[in-house]
Length: 422
Image 1 (cartoon, rainbow, N blue to C red):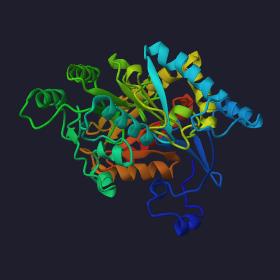
Image 2 (image 1 turned 90 degrees about the horizontal axis):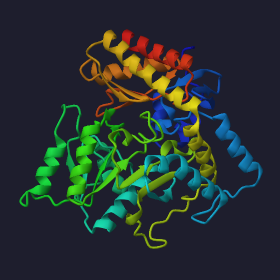
Image 3 (image 1 turned 30 degrees about the vertical axis):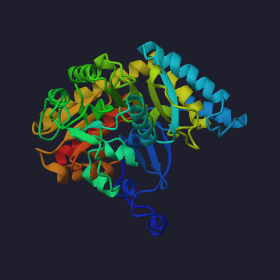
Image 4 (image 1 turned 180 degrees about the vertical axis):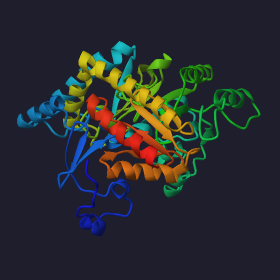
């Protein structure tokens, strides 16, 4: 693929806030996209291993989802519905229950919270405090849960918290199972804190955790760790919130990242790829007995995104298709083999992942400077890839779940070359 050059970005630089970030890393103007490819306004293709920060697990403009959206628009379907009953919402709830919830034994109520993932987290925290009568929360180092105030309180990043002027006085942070400083028995620490009447720490309303810490550096929680966490929260009457906003909708190889552990959380947040088309849609799912809301106590103007319901219904149906499931398994296995290839290329790289996400940690092998060079080399050779971790030292590989094998191989080849050259 051709070397990247900057197209006209002057209007963005003149009018758009300095807060913009991704466009600085990928300084081109994108015009169209299909499957796993993005195309610039001057016609150059890029393989997308970024997927809208996890919002495009099914790729760009999937034909089946797009046709549902086009048919709905052509029929003058309701576009804005608040929380009113609509055909689009009825069809989504019916299919989501039949395809996602029931087969996994999840007897959850569904709350439509607003357009973004942080809205789902805010609702989850608010509900947990209401249900338990407690105000405290437990979160983990390396966590990322969103940029609104409640979500920032349980997010580990000092930079993000300072930007939001958040102190998080009601939140106790404990080390995640793994992190830059190595493994840690955080469940034992939690048990000690909650069991000791002189620990200075009350059992909280909830523990909020990602089954795979994505922004924190791609750290998957082990099955045993999640089981132990479920056990201790049940013992002390603490609600367990699983944040599946980026790990959900198939990214880990199963619809939810917690499935492998065989646990049932009390509350689950879902967003990003839920609509299957990049349309804003967020849910807070919770055990039926936790539905303590009074009508109108938690609202949002755009919680009834009808077009997103239509797309999400079509996306749910991927999970009934043998071709999709086979392809997901095949592509996950290819990423796993790529880990072996990278280990042979550079034994100092630390490789972590699950399913269709791979973290390439350069901390002991050149650090953030190397990761930045690799990212730039990849971009210059037609590959979009994100960095994450405490210091942006981890390359986060997130191709579409539906990517064609030959395109996956091509993108991995560029990344392999980038690491070898840098």
